[in-house]
Length: 625
Image (cartoon, rainbow, N blue to C red):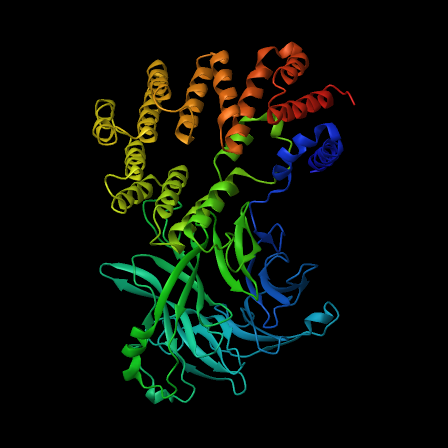
């Protein structure tokens, strides 16, 4: 850690001197964005090397109660949502967990195993602003000998919803009146993880039920009627409303600050590669926008079907993808808290309640933001360009690919009817799914997108080629497969170059590098010497030249990209490759080679800037100041 900090300070000073040098001002402008750009909005609220879970935000949004094992067993802890030290609230040797706040911002209800190994409901009172000096009062609320779990206090503080096995032996939602300690059942056919809506009229909860021959856990909604007697309750739960039917599992619902938003976890990817999507996989963090009808205060169950038809689900958006384990979402005024598994244990983290991806007004702007922020050229540059490795980009490849997937998923989810942007985004989503080992999921997405575009559109070719590549066509077949596409789009140069690139990639994978070079050269010779398709083929050809030891041919291509590429990132990528070639040219006289290159290529400021940084690293390595 000390070495990393010292290295960061050194390069920070170097960067400052570099930017202050007037002779290098033109190069500073090039690199400045790479010093400061951030790619993750995930904020770590706790970082203790043991499990911190079950965050609960006080109604005034100032305090965070949570469950932690930092004292050896599970206890309730408290800290400000703005940071600072954490204070221990419970100290018993038995487990205390699942905190929730009452409306007064001083009372916390939680589950404890002090008097019952299956858990009972307890109450804790303190003054958070006066911690650690505040007196803590703790008392038992309920002494049922059986399972009690996961409480949630109503916004007005008059009811506590919790899970219990009383009466039936099965887990159901029960309601406790803290003024009298009386309890009444709320569900009868199963229910866990209750969550009150902000208006106090609805309860969301999870329930296990059968769909055909499968058992799934889904989120249900139920209206809360304050004037309904026990005898009037619907014992069959026919007035419970299944929110989102489907062959997926869901858990941990939590309402936003109004009744039009619901957050929850959705298990829709086989993240542990056991050929089964279930609750053992990592869930995605979802935000659901919905419109609820006004609750009928009469409690007439006959109106339930009408209520069901009046619930409108308008949008389902992933806020955090399923490549990392997330549990226990909790909402505050502007942030969404959750427990995130990192390095074998859970920490509490937070993201903006809109997710880690900003919202734009159109699919085009959403796509352009994702494409500029998460271009694959950036991680490629980090992996191949040693001259840029010291720049404080503050990005790990794992986080990059996670956010890249989410950024392009967002385009498809938020703009379901806006082609071509959602299809272009789908191509990137499929790439990331293949990267994550979910090839079957990517193939299904390609097949779905083929139905979204016309057969005579250039996008159809891109999808088809990507699908063939994902499937891994055997050689006799792939050599003939593109012929029909080539004939159909005979006058479209970018499409022809895309087909040539597809064939060249497959030829390279099969060890036929000379054939790959021939295919690429043929595509480069036909049509204008410009455009994205031209640059891509030129770059691939240069990479193959490098593999064959033809440094001169590779340099010629990379320099052409520096002159003609419209994208700054393509030019940066070419710079990285050129520097890599130059460093291998004469290892014993590396400094002289770089100095000569700076003179030779002075017309390319991006390249010279990179060479300056490499020479600075060499000076440091050699002990020169």
